[in-house]
Structures are given as C-alpha cells and as structure tokens.
Image (cartoon, rainbow, N blue to C red):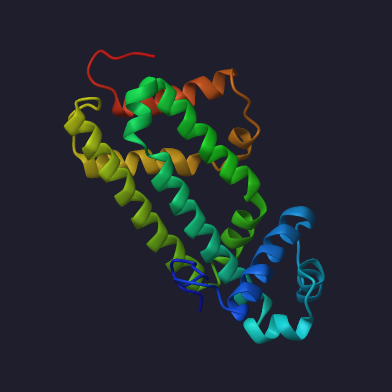
Amino acid sequence: MPSLSGDVAVSGPIRKSERTRLALLNALRAELQATGSYSAESVTRRAGSSTATFYNHFESKDEALDAAFALLMSELLSMVESGLSIELVLERGLHGFGEDWLRKCVQFFRANSVLFRAAQARSLLSPAIEEIYAHSEALAISHCERFIRLGQAAGVFREGEAAAMARGMMILAEGYNNPAVLRLSAGDGLHDELVRCVVQLLATTGETL
C-alpha cells in the first residue's frame, strides 16, 4: 500500500529505484490526464521504461493508481500549506487573498481532474484510497485552522471557532473540484461569488468586498 504522505523521496540524493518509481507515477498521471485511461504498457512507454519495471514497483494497475493518488494528495497538501499565507492577506487584503486562493485551487484541480475522478471511482473498492483521502483531509484542515488562528491573532479575521471555520473553508475548497468551477474565468459572476464566500467566512464584522 502506498504511504499516506505520498512522498517518494528521502533526505539526500534520491536513489535510482525511487527516481524510477516517481517517473512511472508521473507518467501514469500524464497518460490518464491525456487519454482518460492507462495501462502498464502505455505508462512505461511514456516513461521510457519497460513493463517488467512497472511490475517491479507495483503489483497491479490499481496499486499504481493508489500510489499516484497518494503523491497527488501530498502535492495538494503542499499547495494548501503554501497558499494559506497570512502575509498575502496583510499585503493584498482579504479579497486579494480570496482571489489567489480560488485561482490556486482551481488550477490544481483542473490539472489533475481525471486522476481525481479515477480515484473517486476506485474509492468504493479501495480502502487505501479512502485512508489516503481521510488522512490528507485531516492534515489540510489542520493547515486551515493554523492559518485562521494566525489571522485571528493578527486581527484580520473575525472571532469564531477556528476548528469549525477551518472545516468550512475546506468544504468550500473541495467544492472547487466541480466541472462548473473548473471552467471558471476571472470576472464572471460565479468566480466573484466564490471569492465572496471566502471573504465572508473570514472577514471581521462590517468588512465587505
């Protein structure tokens, strides 16, 4: 089963086997996003490797998909952690932060939409996918809660139960992985309403767009 973090690297130089595994996972993701399906043969062809190498790293196509999803969620957590920036709120205001947060989330979901759908379809049959998702969601909520507590301490976010506000913010973000949202362009009505939702969740009393 893939690690929950999805990390494939270790401290120091990456060993050849880890580089090969990462190349296979990235090839799987690229193949899936480009064609909507994948096989050991198509993945290894894209990675410039062999089918035997694929099965040296993964027992099956499904196990490879689990590992690719774990890597994806690790990258999503990194995006969440870096995107929740109090410095950005202080520099650009809450509306500027809301626009930046929506843009980053939509870009990430758009670039990985097919893998998300494939993992969702497999989740009913894969305890690994469910475990990876639950663990990653809990970590993402903890990043949100820390961000909210920092904003409250700085006086730029409203008072409230930080844990509940963090869950609300994460539910909003998960909703961005929606076909209507993935087709968004800046300036249309839905874009502005979604930014408004972030602002209203965090804003101090009386603050408006």
